[in-house]
Amino acid sequence: MHRFAAAALAGILALLPFAAQAAAETPEKPRIELGVGGKPLLYYLPLTIAERKGFFKEEGLDVTINDFGGGAKSLQALIGGSVDAVTGAYEHTIRMQQKGQAITAVLELGRFPGIVVAVAAANAGSVKTIKDLKGLKIGITAPGSSTHLTALYLLTKAGVEPDSVAFVGVGGGASAVAAIENGQVDAIAHLDPVISKLEADKAVTILVDTRTEAGTIAVYGATNPAATLYLKDDFIKANPKTTQALTNALMKSLKWLAKAAPEDIAATVPEEYWLGDKALYIQALKASMPTYSVTGIVSEAGEKSMLDFLKVVDPIFKSATIDLSKTFDATFAKRAAETLK
Image (tube, one colour):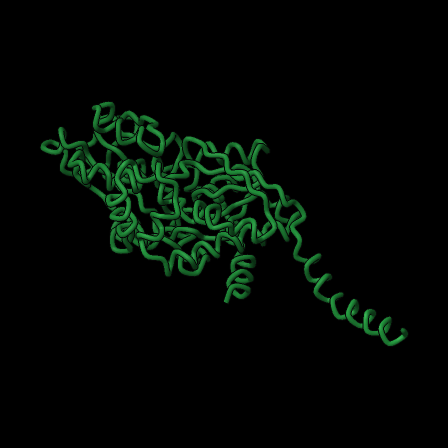
């Protein structure tokens, strides 16, 4: 009898380290509200993959995704406290530091912006360069979003006053396609699959394309980080295990995407993401696959490139003191990469 009791006690003691490890890794806040601006866009594909493949659940998280009209709106939701985390443009971390709001990115999802500026076919004869957009209506996902800022950057570099064009928020999916094809806007700054759909319909002519490294460097002079996972600093400090769990889930997405065939990706996302044409969606995937981060880490050169970008689009940054080391914390991404080896 004593032998059985001893054996049982030994078994319990053997399990204690595993129980302690599980407790150590349990997220402090398992229920998370996460914001995104235009979830169907390929810019945010790693988020959809994490959701559809169950990576959040594997990390002990119950994530509710709130899809807003553009990245600026998801940022507002984070500042207002209605969401806990955001998958959004890295530049928001710099912008918020300048405003005294401590927000830090912990994982890079996109290493190239993937944003394309194109002119409607009806205007292609008269619009050959960015400078020719003066006086026209330009569709963007939403005011203040990365598509908006990219258009502002290109216009400013071309010597065109930003107030000489009209920006129109057209959303992130079929509404953006309709805006061009129905003549609501004359040009568009947008992302895939919207751009590939417009190309296939011969509805646009492309002026600028940052879906590739060469296209990105041609615009910015360096690589330029795009979508990231970012959170308020006080949330990160209060919930480090939750932050790590979110990072792990999205890192799993990046690793899965690096090996997945476009056909497998198309089969994983909701059908409505295809914009009515699965073959076209696969074509858009092939065009956008180079944009996704390989390491999950924003490089120092990328950080500087983004600050230089903001100095062009917003004069306030020309004299602002920004500590770029506080805009991205690589700790969580490095830990995730090590864990998922």
